[in-house]
Image (cartoon, rainbow over all chains, first blue to last red; front, side, top):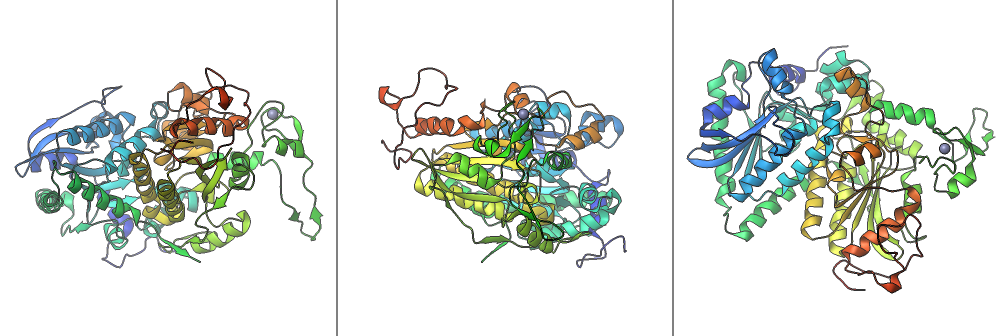
Amino acid sequence: MTDEVITPESQLTAMDRVRLARDPNRPGTLDYVNELLERVVELRGDRSFGDDQALIGGLGTFRGRAVVWMGHQGGTNTKENLERNFGMPRPEGFRKAKRLMQHAEKFALPIITFVDTSGADPGISSEERGQATAIAECLLQMIGTRVPIVCTVIGEGGSGGALSISLGDRMLMLENAVYAVASPEACAAILWKDAGKAAEAAATMRVTAADLQRFGMVDELIAEPIPAHEATRDTIRTVGERIEHHLAEVIASWDKDDNAAIEAMLDKRYQKYRVMGAWTTV
Amino acid sequence: MRSFFQRQGKFRPLTKTDERGMDGATIPEDLWTKCPKCGELLYTRELERNDRVCTKCSYHFRLSARERIDTLVDAGTFEEWDTEIRPTDPLEFTEPKGSYADKLVQTAKKSGENESLITGIGKINGRPIAIVVSEFSFLGASMGSVFGEKLVRAVERAIDLRIPVLTVNASGGARMHEGLFSLMQMAKTIAAFHRLGEHRLPHFSLLVDPCYGGVPASFATVADVMLAEPGALIGFAGQRVIEQVTRQKLPEGFQTAEFLLGHGMIDQIIERGNIRHTLMVLSDHYVGRPANAQTGYPRGLLAEDPVVDEVVENVRVGEEA
Ligand SMILES: [Zn+2]
């Protein structure tokens, strides 16, 4: 049995892209924020229990416009990874994200998000503090937030923890980013009874940006002629241009004082997700 | 997630329908069912009459979606919606045991259902309500595209009809065979419930054993009233995953309905025998029907003993009876 399945788009397998997406040197949320935004102020804490450094956010100026930004952030070394829980948010992270979305709504600030997490934290204390509810409340807030939202998957999009800050008017995805309902290892462990079959699971789950663009879940695939970790500045600059382009398009038909325009934007957002699915009728 | 499948296997209480043995002989329906909690041997017909709640220790056995609907609605009032939608295999997903397409055919044959969600309209003492019930025996009530589509259509119909929505939620996690289509059902369903809320129509969610993954991480935990059955296991991550990742011993009663109540995640734990009454009382709060001397409602907190149920025909939210 061949270990990896070649995707039609290129010579890279799905699992190659999973590895690229997880590369510790691949630019993360903070790299994008530091490069693309000015006057950045991090807003911390969920006002209830704690501050989750795996899901961070705040204010900043993007291309001359005040925005709220948020994204997942892991670490590049052991110490950072412990501080940031390997980029896996706890309930406090999702509650902070929800708070920041409400903040953006209150001041009519557009939102840009950077998606990069292996998933929500699967720990005892996260369950005690309502991990499922925290994700659900974040999603419910996001789908109805009355400001333009542009989301970009920059690395690994892991299940519900990634989805929590991925609902918006535009969904962008880097070519070597991946997005999956379960990690290839978990899928392989359950269906193949062997976590070592992750490469097969990754291929069959269709986790690449090209797959998801074909399924209509991604509005734009951002090419990575050189993998992001080897061309950090160029990748970030390109991503910045594409976010600017999409944000400008959404903002063009939005007006914070025009209720009808806001409703039209929300209706479009509703329809975007309303049509996702594959079924037949008899 | 898998520990619950195993648990269900071990506790599988009875075979309701006749099964053919190897030689074609009919194996008779089990007369007795052993309660997994207290060990009591229960007369199966007696157990069924009690909505499959142990008459000795009140352990709540799992129900199929159709058994559940029978316990909820007035006899003969349930009309099923969207039965013509069927799952497909958008990823052409193949695992060692075979293709998803084949698995769907086998699962349909085994479970007698075409998908893991049944939706429709029914009445609870005359009050119309949209009812959405997941079927755990169909691929662990994982949220595939059909689940999402049927749920959203049910919510959209409830908005048109101006009636409340009840969801009865069990799930073992994601439908990996549908990849990101499965994950996106979380977005699609939560969007529908956001709309329901905009129309000021209530969503009642009843969490039943077991409820894990994307269902509680989306629409099922942001209902206007959160209910759960006693002893139900509910959470985001499954217990085996948590044990493997954390290498810690799970606390006593971890992720039970009682644990969720203690941590402020749900409003009430409701015994199966009281659920119809609870839903009726709740519905009336949102349809603008004030309690008065004629309603038969007792004063104070929700009574343990159901009062005589009052039948009101065709009340819609926002209208007076
Ligand atoms: Zn018992």
